Image (cartoon, rainbow, N blue to C red; front, side, top):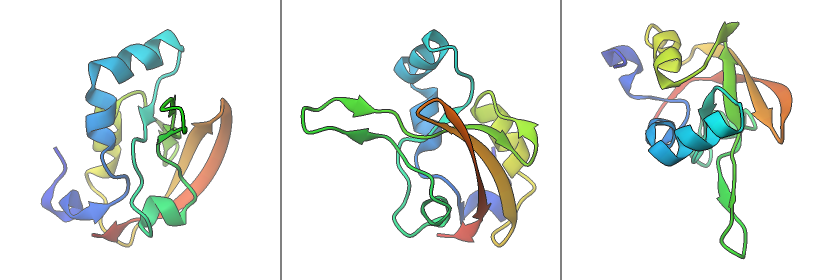
Length: 116
């Protein structure tokens, strides 16, 4: 669980609920991907400003997978526990380097954490 300093900082919205769902974990395992999938990204928030994308629905109702965090600050992110361990000591204003998968390709971004 994040400490009080990071508790109110916004990086990614709803990612814990997304990653912890049994369906998402099964999908990522089946696809052979370890990481933290993004469900939503708050408009104007830190992740949005860094160019990260959450999941979306097509007009037909199909789900398009969002970005998948695989590395933060040079440390691998296999699941939400890894991510929380990395984010725990951080505070609003900190800038972090993230590596994520989008459409199977590794990409990089710098995210400046901010208060909600």
